[in-house]
Image 1 (cartoon, rainbow, N blue to C red):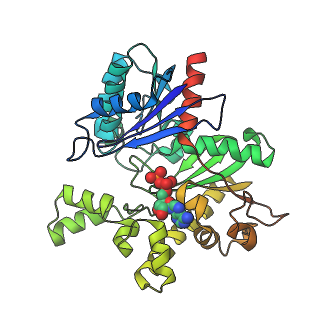
Image 2 (cartoon, rainbow, N blue to C red):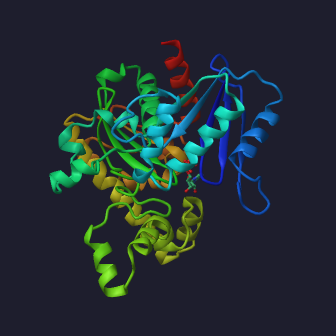
Length: 368
Ligand code: ADP
């Protein structure tokens, strides 16, 4: 049994994965760590997770870590040296990595005799060619501070790439895909022959598509402009773009279901937010089609991608000339393949399962 931990600064999401039994399903979420009404710290949270498992034998722990920086491009067995290197990466992902690190420390203390493996959200994108990963800024600054496109949602992309290939009955090496991971965070990735060659998130998960509370792409001058005209300091600019932008900024709700309800009721802000969200996706699909040259399939995944026919249809509307179409009935029924028969590009819906993928990667590393 593999325990998969996704630790945030105030929460621990866990799942016990039995790789021989896809239906085994022990999972849960400990929230409000260090807050009133919650447990004191991550050590107490992990203790609560283990107590709840009632003695299930854990063979290994797989930890989700958001940012692997330039160093970690594959699943890595955690030791003190790795942990020290993870601490050094915190400036690259101050919102995401600290929770993961505290989770590893607490879990190693609680389960000192089992291997702990860190699995990185950036790893799948280590194959980005320099032309795609390089920002056109001063090269010395970029080198000194590791400023480049890293990409995120890699575990999800790798998983759905494999599932989509199985669904299409083709080897991943023979397929060119665009993966649209549309959850609270959202990203587009171009996958050529099973390898990520372009992705919309960059140095951090702020870039690219419109998200629940993040702006995605934006003129980089907006920050300086807000500073000059509105007196916002750097922290305030960061806060508004990370937490008060995206669907929330445009329509006052960050949850797509709530947004769709307001749009259905005729709310103009929700209508515009939906259009901005879908327009951005369509723009990326066109761009990534150009990057790939030949496109075999578009894969929708994560909460919005798996469950919103409205978003899928609107995001791919008007692309018939490119061989991209969505069949209305199949889409409404959330079928696995939602393009019409005989289309040049297969459009499919593939549920992601990051925890299972982390467990599989953990087991594979330990076997090797
Ligand atoms: P996370 O990125 O936190 O893992 P998810 O992948 O669960 O998030 O995606 C969450 C998003 O999915 C939310 O915006 C939620 O409203 C949306 N979502 C979930 N179910 C539906 C649905 N039936 N229709 C539209 N959106 C949905």
